Image 1: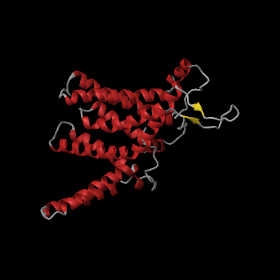
Image 2: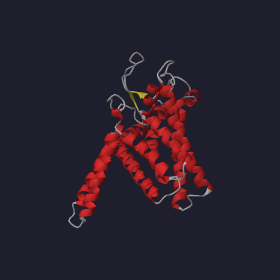
Image 3: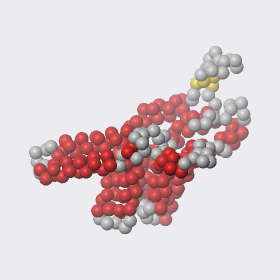
Image 4: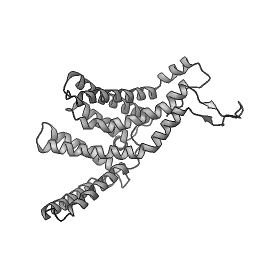
Length: 287
């Protein structure tokens, strides 16, 4: 993340410089997403989720997601691919990037029917991105950190004290990041189950949406240890439940069959088999 403008500039000029960066557009996108989700949530809890404002808020949330991930992908790849680069190498590198994956799936949600649960993983990410940008860029621009006692103009390496708000935000991000990423992983798995239920009831377009989202979740499983842990914890919980003597043997047998089929599918779709054995976990984390 780019540093804030120099503290020697007037406040107005610092804000102008900050507002002209792509990173600020990224921040505005995440902030808009949070606002849109809040507005949609108000409509949802009052059972007005198909009202005009609810539909606008829902689409605006995913439009904001497309914008934020589009900015990240643009910044990451605008100068990386030179003329003469093999198209296959470009395609593999793009598809292995989590930010590209989230950009593509946000486009899918933008043009698909409303699925409220799909908003929640993006919301969690946006909370942390807005918090981090506020701590590292917005607060230092508005209220530059003060030099600690004993600092001199000839000692530029002397640390500066951050504001209490910036310190509180930093502590929040540090304390809750891992738990929140596990929450995102759990929500993404629940979303797959939700889509499966829709497909079973033959909702319009549900099988296509389930197939697309399954590809996305498979990529997440390859690259995210949080998703892997969420699947392992869920499977362990079900294993424990089916061992109950009151559970019919047919249910236990069915669960073992599901695990076997799932393992076969995971092994068959391992990207390492098709990319020269390279692991898929080298992608950047979603931003």
